[in-house]
Amino acid sequence: MRNRLPPLNPLRAFEAAARRSSVAGAAQELHVTASAVSHQIRILEESLGVTLFVRSKARVKLTREGEALLQPVKSAFDMIANAVVKLDSPEMAGDLVVSTPLLFTSRWMARHIGEFLDQYPRINLKVIPSNDDREVYSPDVDICVRYGEGRWRDRHVSLITHPALFPVVSPALMNGPNAIRKTEDLAGKALFCEHSGSWMRWLAHASADKLEGIRILEIGNAHIGIEAAIHGQGVALGDSFSVRDDLMDGTLIRPFSITVPSRHAYYLVSRQELSDTPLVSAFAMWLSENVE
Image 1 (tube, rainbow, N blue to C red):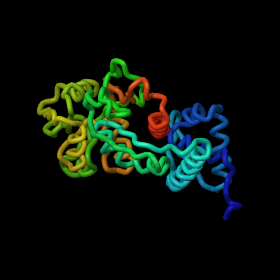
Image 2 (tube, rainbow, N blue to C red):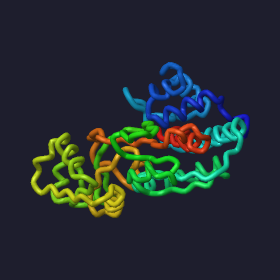
Image 3 (tube, rainbow, N blue to C red):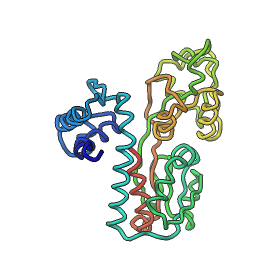
């Protein structure tokens, strides 16, 4: 079985291109040319005797064989990376208190927190689900993930990601006589959001802001809107980061390709004196490596 293992470089090129859905993006990450990435992928395809990607001008899409290969390859690279971290760094131990928005906590952290705990088994992690700035200035909180404009006085602030906004629905709303297939189908549906202005910007960008029967419901927290959409109660305005895993596993579907940039972004915020400490740095590095 070991004799069938392909060379490492083609696997790295494949994993990066699949994760980014782009040969150019993989080339940038690996610090090589796009043609070099394409060449490595061809070597892998020839070695395995299968086609791994459907190629278009700007993007690449995994074939069924590519999808079957991606997760084992990604898991293997993650295991190697974690092993190297443990070899290169003394084992970290201690208490770490992290405050994260409820949407971020439920849609992303809940699915990935085990990876952090496996990598740092002696860090006692406490997560506070909140987007309240009181935690930013609390002496009891070590680091915060915040969704905002990036301005927190006397704090170390670094950008995590600037998401795009777009409608998301349950697969159940994509079928049947009342299925959502065009923007006109949004009329009469409950449109969930935290603030109506975001939906209005998207509707205007989609030339649908003049539709009759538009019904926007401000529901207090983006997490509640996403949960309502998952249960088929209407359409939520999701952000590209928080709903990424839901889209990948089919829990949610994007009925339209139209997006608008969010006016806010996700940031890491901590006290200046804590930003370079081992535990805070470990969490910040883990997060940045997994948010792509």
